[in-house]
Image (cartoon, rainbow, N blue to C red; front, side, top):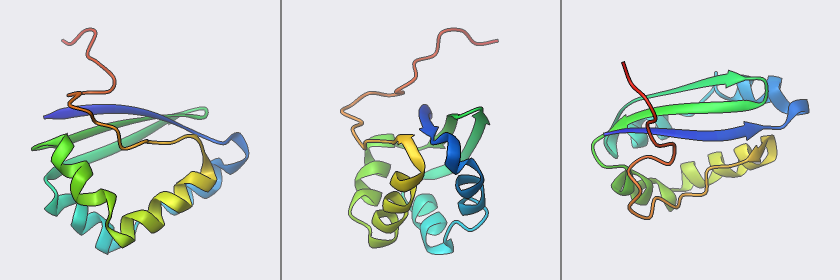
Amino acid sequence: MRVALHTQVRADRIAEYEAAHREVPEELTAAIRAAGATSWTIWRSGTDLFHLLDCTDYTRLLAALEELPVNIAWQARMAELLDVVHDYSADGVEAPLPVVWEL
C-alpha cells in the first residue's frame, strides 16, 4: 500500500533536519524494512515535508515501530526539529493524505 504523510520542519531547524536524515541509524532503517516498508521518500518545500511510503500494512508498520527503543529515540529527536510531527494514529486510515488525482 502507498501512504502519503505531511509534517512540518521548524524554519530555524531545516539544516539540522536534513543533516539528521543523512545519519538515520541503520538499526532504524532495518526495523522499518522488517516492519514491511519497501520505500520511504521525503520531499521538502519550504518547511512542509511530504512523505511517500510504500509498505505492506501501514497500521502493522506503525505498531511494530511505536515501542521500539531506536524509533522512540528517533521520534524524540524529530520532535525537537518539527512543528508538525507524525502522531502514529493510523486508526485504519489507509492514507492520511488521500489521493485526489493520479495520472
